[in-house]
Length: 499
Ligand code: NAD
Image (cartoon, rainbow, N blue to C red):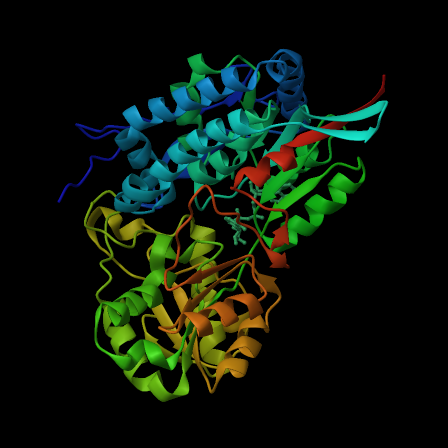
């Protein structure tokens, strides 16, 4: 067991600045307005740094820097860009612990996960897109004896990216890696709750990228995000966040007829068919573990399996075992490597989750475990902790239909295959789903019937770079990860040549 020292304490690995400016043209730049806002750590609730409050003037300065760099960066070869991406990955790997601790401190997530998953996955994304861009080919079509069509890939130019707070480095990487590989320059706006770990990364890789290729403007959604997404100086906007914000982003982008990628919210079903309980073996154990995935990252995951659907015939047994497993999830200091569930990312998020406890109870749902704020005492007493919570109710309830974004699962029962699919698809969203069955035939059929971009089958919450990720219905437009992502950051140029 290791408990990492918090920034400011003796032996701390990751030190924070007391003030974070914007990152523009490869250096820190103070906000035009001179305004800053405070950033508390969810671990203790104490403010640890202040952050530049960006606005339209700062976005313009960042766009100037990006446009200044775009021509030269866009003309580098795929091999040159791939080499830089690989160096970024190497640099991150050499500082894995520092980045992992920084991320845990700012977001409240357990360092156990940032060490084992978030940061290694981010590193792998840079390597994956370094490989993908080198392997990308153009094409030639012979139209007739005298005419040939050549197809080339070209970068879009300068692109905007807006990301949420739940996986700060990973969400930044999902967008930066393909954009940079394809030869674009970027203006990125992090979430106001979690800019520091991304700026820490910018400093770490500053010497690897030409100035202006990546620029970070901090600030709030309407003040900094809207001028970026509405700008006529970007050729694409990529957004990850809430579905309601995604609707606005589409409206802003429509003014300039630019492509939009939207990775939005979810209310993912996790379906347990009766054959999972046919034996008390490793498979059953894995399925129970799959149930507890709703608490991973404190439930602050767009694909959180926040609706558990259990077949009638095994309902009592499976739910009983799943509750026991849920109560064993260790909550504590995010900087402790034993901790499995840490703090919610912000006080607003904490309040939102607590309000859903009231909503669920008022609707007549039954709390089977949890349902309250967790007081961890000592230094953590002011932190934003919630006990993992299991509700039992019906799919039409708000706790089944609305994204809570906390360690909360709403459980219900289904009678047969068709009933499971009907309940699973009865939602605005279509991002993720889990299917658990020993019958691969049944699991396959369910996977094809569920309206979601990602269906995990006998596993959950794996995010390999080579697997396409994105939403159906209200969960978004476009895909991330997979080499197909390069298409979202490139134009196709056709030269039709007659000889
Ligand atoms: P949010 O929509 O409130 O904010 C996301 C980002 O958008 C932030 O940077 C915010 O400042 C900015 N923003 C807010 N209003 C804006 C506006 N009017 N114009 C431009 N920018 C604006 O979302 P959040 O609360 O930060 O993140 C949680 C949400 O993100 C959840 O709904 C979750 O499901 C979703 N999410 C989706 C994925 C995915 O891949 N589908 C991944 C992670 C998170």
